[in-house]
Length: 154
Length: 430
Image (cartoon, each protein chain N blue to C red):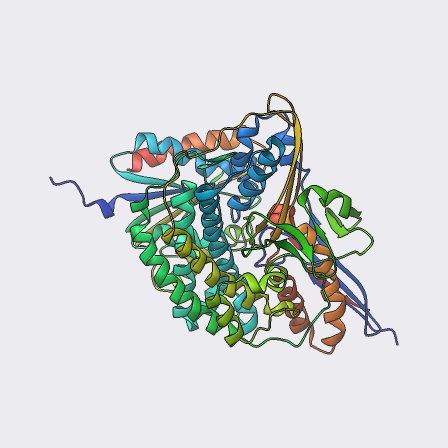
């Protein structure tokens, strides 16, 4: 079988800030997956600023985004949304320090009629988003779980 | 009859970070205005203590995802000031170039995604995009080109890693500019179209007698160098910042209000830069600004969106000038010999003057760091604008008055994630 064309590689986008504790979880998972999914995925890191996200997934066929969220669920809860077919729930709005963030980027791309055919968003419930480095135990455990789940899926 | 009302906006949307605005109106008069900012402990200043000077640009770049270059530029210039090093020639030009990229990216984001919807009555850019897709797409293309400049010089667009004290880790070869030069030329044309479009937005009549503060350089529109001057007589080097400015604690906000000693509030940012340095803009930018209806001084804060659009055009024009004159420097960085000293720098971040001060020991370890971002400098001026604006608009229905107040806050593109974390807005009427 011929290798699949380059553009069909899944694009994995890890979002976060290394200096905001659990907010770094998207970046952490992206870095681990980059080492383990070289052949099947393109992995990038983003700060979560929306306009850059729109450019990042422009023209991609399959996209997976991993970010931290704070919705009130138990820390470490893994939320999963198929953003290509449903509007992102409220927890993804207003939970970023960016004015124009992931949720706005997805909805703007949808308004422009340019959403990738597959756009899956994983949100990991954070425990602590204060300035600082390192993940909380619950979020670290969720990171390991999601990493294995994504490896299995791909 | 006592007629009292409060305008409360608990979550100020479309500003970077989170904050809140509270306006109290009593008997048809403004009784109180508070821009509330909840600042985390000054984490980064503490985090820098004991670190090597070489780590500072990469750490401070993480303070803000929107303007990492500004933090890097103020950091490297302050540390070079401490060590008595001057970076010149092509390295200096490359620093201007990477800053051009950041101005474009940051301003384009604010103009199209955050501020323009206010003027056209849209709740957000998503709704605006449905009616004006071509305007939004053009804004995205402008921003993308700015990000490409940042990536080429900064190593990557998110948290750039190529900037160091003394210069860069790597400098680009001449041929790396071949493709991007063509894209910048096209982007410059689109920046002009964007400026023309922005100038057609409806602007409220509202002018203030600000004290504008910005860098001024004898030969160029300011990025990294110059004296800090105002239209009311200030003229100092960054070393004299602390003698002339003071940070005041206010009870309603965790962020410190920065004021000019003995004079109070002042304004930094695009309108201040423009009003002090109009004569240093390129001929193209000057002509386009006039054509867009701006005079050489901009005292209407709502027109800051036009000034940002002029600066986007200028930044592309300046980027092309730098690229056209580029010859790779022999060394990517000047050699640094650390010594015990204190260094100071102001540079012009997209949102205004960004002050850094570092005290370093003889091994080059940071003893003390002080960072004053533009948003904390503008905080008092934002409140002053609302004290003046609300009485003019007091008969508006609640939702429209609240809308106007939020728009007035967004005139400043406040970056609360730099100054602070978590902003919200309340208007109360008795």
